[in-house]
Image (cartoon, rainbow over all chains, first blue to last red):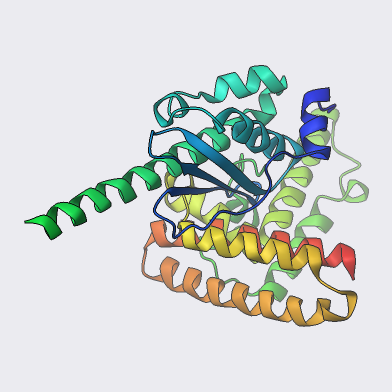
Length: 137
Length: 166
């Protein structure tokens, strides 16, 4: 099976590989796996006070399509608002990377990772608000 | 990607639906079935029977491929005893997945003289998962068994990657 040029480009020059401090309050971490193929994807976002994503990093062990899907996702996430990021669909990744049907699950994994990272960040914000409300009462 | 088995490999071999099967007995059964289905023994029969024998021989080979590997045997058993449970329990614990990333990194960066040591540690972890898997099947806890089968995939992948480096 031939990879598209875009997949090869992300695979050979992955954007935003790395790690953010998963304990930081302004960082959301999503880690998801595809046990059929033994792939694992970690995607992290750092969110500013205005709800914009300042930075995004990923680390993926898996096939070229999984790496390209998460690399592309971090490019889209940077500068986006959290609410817009939550709207990213795997089908957009499929389209951009021209993924064949057998590799669609890689884009699903990336969407799941984005959702998990946002969910983690939102939980931290809810906890922070609850904690500050408790300390003021 | 692993495909769902089309037929029951345990039934093909005529053995019980259980994880703990004696491997020598399984191999003897494989050799016996292979002999019975060998073309040299089935020459006298007609074309239609010949096709049936060939099909049956292919089934025996497929079943053997599954049954001889304890992890593939476990996967098949899960499909048979609790259809759909592997699909239902695909989302793994994030802490386990973070460890899986660490492990994949260690494998990538492993110096040649440290391969044996890392292999040993991964095999120990795999043995621990297999022990939990055996208990899960014995207790009829198919959800727990499915999680162990999925987790094992990461360790087996790490071992396979190390194999190509040593």
